[in-house]
Image (cartoon, rainbow, N blue to C red; front, side, top):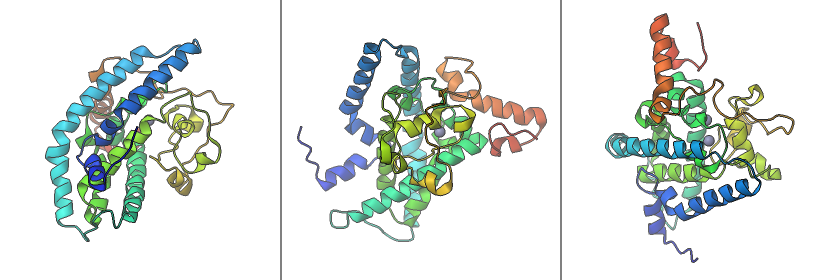
Length: 288
Ligand SMILES: [Zn+2]
Ligand SMILES: [Zn+2]
């Protein structure tokens, strides 16, 4: 297959606040999922069909929520941040190295966004949906929150926009990064040597999804893992530990609506019962 993209096409591909990058590599994603099913079946192991269908259903809700909020609200806020930008940093064929700078900034923004999503309860209420998967298969990547606006995840990218990168490039880069992350949700790929210390890998992401105490709140990186090394949150997969995927408490329902909002109810119930708003901004599991 010939891969001949002009720079303008690449810009178009990365543009939009949706899943442009995922759509562009859709055949590759489908091929990888089919291959994973074939390998798991050939090994006479159990493929989590129910979990995969649930992930696909939750992905549908995520796309609807995204369509409702991204263009209308997040897009407008991002456009405002760009309007009052500090500099104008135009990305073009001539100054392509700026794309590397943007990649690093967007990757760093994801690291902080993801770390906060695990350490601040109202952000965790959204992100916990992704952590309800009990098997690491590629489709697990699609289990995403229905509350993109409430989670405030987009706020972490606004400084990059405010600096002077156009919103379509910033959110396009974020979309490309999420697309890369689809491929690290698998149990079939073992550790990959020295690469483990630089980029996010299936092994590193299995650690992130495991609820074993040794693995909690580790490996927050998107494409690069250098941020985890830098900020002390890296954990290598240990062969002596059998990973248990999912939340630290058992999932109570297979209803996508319950999964999407369950942690919000739990958070508000804690806050109302104890009359303390701390519950909303403190870490998950915090008690007075
Ligand atoms: Zn996470
Ligand atoms: Zn994941």
